[in-house]
Length: 353
Ligand SMILES: *Cc1c(COP(=O)(O)O)cnc(C)c1O
Image (cartoon, rainbow, N blue to C red):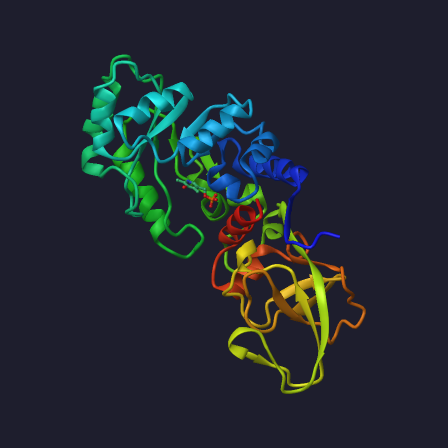
């Protein structure tokens, strides 16, 4: 019996999710996001499952190194792009497409006669994170096109701030700003992330950049991956390692934040925030044992959490509790912990590896 929290990833779910995403995205091509260790699922494992994707995207050079070391030569976009002149040579050795979001990056490219990467100009349309101002776009595009040797391709992209909210006017405004600024400009285009693909199918353009849906997750209010026809690929589980009887009035855990209102059978599960389970998960957050949901009670600690087993008398030492997984979506845990499912999988994957 394992005594620790563990993450399992279902590669066939990842493969099936890619098929589903391709159907939704067609005729747009699909860039599979592998950043943050594939949202905690493991970059190499995810890259293998997504080998039919049209391209990959990573956030860091380290991720690109790992991807190439795993044997993948697929077209890969480096989302953050170079942060120094030296980064351009490093990216070239890894055959990465570069995202250009800042004028400083142009100067490094112009100074390096060996550069020859496909480029993605990232445009500012309302997110105000990474992106080139619309007033700088035409000149930047011209200077990038004039590089010698010429880039094999210059694509245009932008990123949605509010696509998970179908009623927000922000996305339509961003699409309009993108179209106006890029009017008459050659190059393939990419706007949508997962919530953009779901809520604004008219904005698919040439390429969609998909993370959450491929991992079986949803960002839409009160929805889970299953509502979109995808399957959560990660299961986070831990064994029940102690069971005890409490009297009415006994308190549980740090801060004594929860007190039994009746005679209570309390279970201790071997997972806590040190294993990537959110400390912010409130009393009442469901955990699945023997197919039944039981509530977390009291504060989550570093390696343990406590559950009320009074209504599950069959529960026994060694039972494996599912903290989230296909039968208990990460979106539900996230809602009880004040976060989103993406953070849940990233943290669980990182902590248990
Ligand atoms: C992470 C990311 C995406 C993917 O978002 P999902 O909601 O996971 O599909 C797309 N584009 C950019 C620039 C990103 O950073």
